[in-house]
Image (cartoon, rainbow, N blue to C red; front, side, top):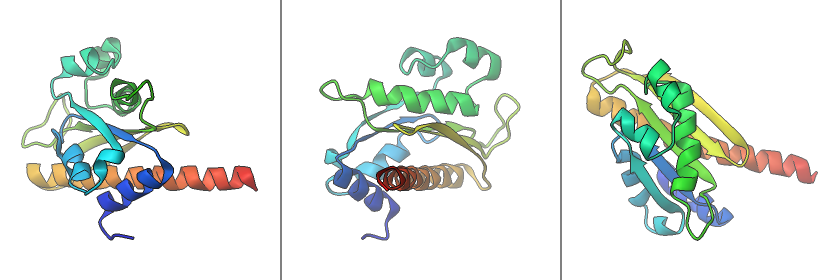
Length: 172
C-alpha cells in the first residue's frame, strides 16, 4: 500500500465502499485538494464546504448559531458539528458520506478571539460517532495549515482503523 497517507485513505475508503466529505475553515480547501490529488479519489470523495466566515458555518453547515455566538468558531464542538453536518450536506443519491472531516482554528499570523495561532480543532464523524481532536501547532501560517491537513488525514485513517477493529470484535 502507498506510503502517502491521502492515497491510503482513498484506498481504504474505496475498499469499504465508503465516502468522505470535508468542512474546512482555516485550511481553505487544502484538505479537499489533498484528497482529490489521489488518482481515483472520485470514488471516495463526495465533496466539501469551505466555510471560512463564521456565518457560513451556521448557514451552510447548520452549526448551532448559539454555540458560535457563545464560543466562537475556534472550538472543538464547532468542529464536531461541522464534521457531522457535512456528511449530509455532501450526500449523494440520498446517501450521506460515511466519514465527515472538519478543520477550524487559527492559522495566523494574528490571534483570533483570544486564541493564538496554531490553535486547531479537527472534527471527525462516522457511523461510530463524533469526536474532536484539539491541536496546538507551531510554525508560520502555511506550516500550520499543512500540519492541520496532515493530521486530519491521519485522524481519518485512525477512525477507519478503529471502525475496523470494533467491527472485528463484534464479529468475534
